[in-house]
Image 1 (cartoon, rainbow, N blue to C red):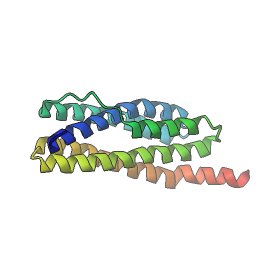
Image 2: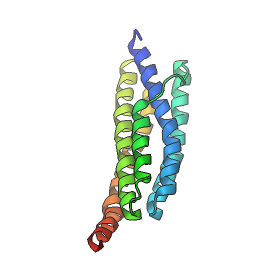
Image 3: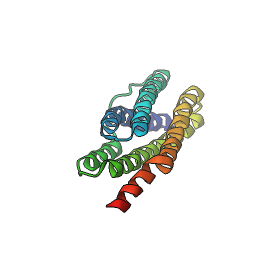
Length: 166
């Protein structure tokens, strides 16, 4: 890497890897979730994530670059953590809380990635790419907010009730 544009492309490859991994992870998380609301949230976000992958592919086309080539180790680790939680034998209610936490860790990573990528694209004069990245950034922020609302209005309350009864 010698230029800012090179860095942009490399970091976008990392994010592309992240998004493709998240597609698989969200499917597993939706299956593991007990709450119908949480299952639906994961399924909806999985559909949005497919759109994120497609937007990144559009951005790569604009930059005349290939999206393949990187493996996002951070996302691999976050998904491995989520899978460990699913295997710990938690009650349904506690697992749902843990799944939201795991999903929000991923969301925060994505928000940081897309925010930085958007800024670099803007600074490199790649306004079309920046616009595509901004759309996804906005959706990632909205998903994080939805997960927080779901946790606070439903999931956490159920887990606390079960915990008090135990």
